Length: 413
Image 1 (spheres, one colour):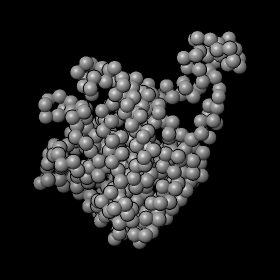
Image 2: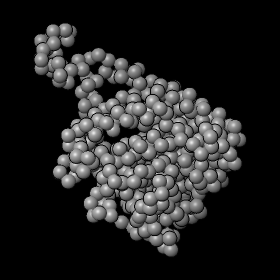
Image 3: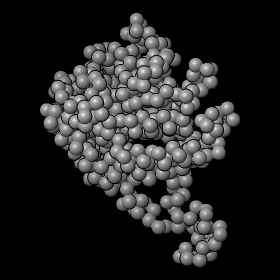
Image 4: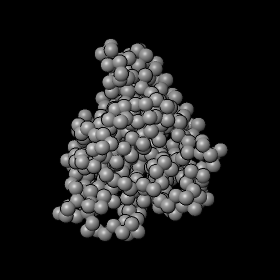
């Protein structure tokens, strides 16, 4: 772990070895929007690529609700490739041969950054006593990490879903520190419907007998069933009806058919009535069970509430254009045609607000039948949009292709 105070920020090495997570401890901590001081704070991150001598080729990739800093590196708990390894890497749309790419675990997370699982002032995990945080708090913590690296301005901030909210907050809170922004499948506020979905997820966790008022670690257990159900419910919102129909339809698992004694699923027996009958049920149960092995329930509660608080217009009497007035950041707003969690209508409203504010903005709707999670999947149109926007922004920023040559004098991750 690297320890850093304001007087030693620029003397600290710029990055962890590529693909390895590292942690920076900010000794001064952070005063949260709720008014509570939190500190010192740890910020876990992964870095890829080379920071050029001018320190102006940095891209911050912001993760979604259940993501983490392993954007392009193998995840240490699951052994799976990074959650956006198809997008971030040498020669890929977010080209690490050209850009220095950072991804942090958000404040409140459970993969190394300060969160409910961290040890609090009582000498035990914070648990539900962890203070309420906001998307802005997450962004301000990330800004402290950039200060640590001596990066005054990001070349670009990019993220989907909750990551897109962080991108928007970056531009609003630090308008001079972001040259280009790409918020994907997101909105400038969390809708009533999405707040409702989050509340159902939270209640599933609270209803688990192993919840123990959030002090489950003291009982050497976790609310696995509740957290799994929360994940199952949320995962449905990340998909589309078309995607579910194409992948599963009404297909029944062969074991269930055999137990029922019917190839049509008609004469159902007791064994199949409450077992894994339909393939989509089996899929959701797998999503739930695998999730609990890598995520903390109290972090899930903390971050979903941060999502619910998000509303960029709250301080401007409902005017979404007001926060962006005077902003010079170049935007590319991206929506997904089959996304019903953050629908295209929300992206269009954002674009209209940016236009009213006089911001340089382009808008792309990606045609896909895969729902909200399509931005994480193989979508060639999204790849082309990403590559084109970054190349154009790099030209406008004066970033020549040789500026971040790993063989040069830049700082390597």
